[in-house]
Amino acid sequence: MSGFGSVAQFLARLILGIIFIAHGWQKLMTQGMDATKVAFGPAGMDVPFPDLAAYYATWVELVGGILLILGLLLPIVATLLIADMIGAIVFVHWDAGFWNADSGYEWPLALIAGLLAVGYTSAGRAAADSYILRRRRRTDVV
Image (cartoon, rainbow, N blue to C red; front, side, top):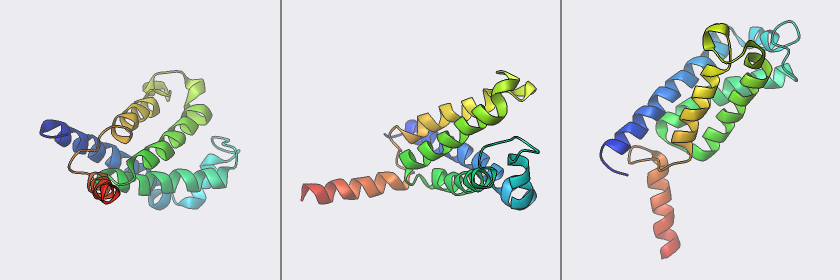
């Protein structure tokens, strides 16, 4: 991938990464983990295994967002974040319907679309994966 396609891939990863970092940071530092666990629990969103789900969502969003920006381990990161967003749709947003304005699943579904686009396509020149995979291919040939 060259030219604008590589720039577009980087910008998409940057935007998605910032969004996920912000949400992970919010859970960890703004709300705090104790409040996040309560929000995931029976008194809040009633997510199964709320403590585990709160830690998973927090760390996969925070670390995953950083890795998206770096372009590192993209298929793995995209898969973990898509799982996070599917959980958000199923346990939080589904009953509210489609529209984001009604707390529906439109927003996490849009994030899934972005993750599919950056996680399972050519990473472009501005991604660590491109250099790691290129070096691996050269070593495999030799």
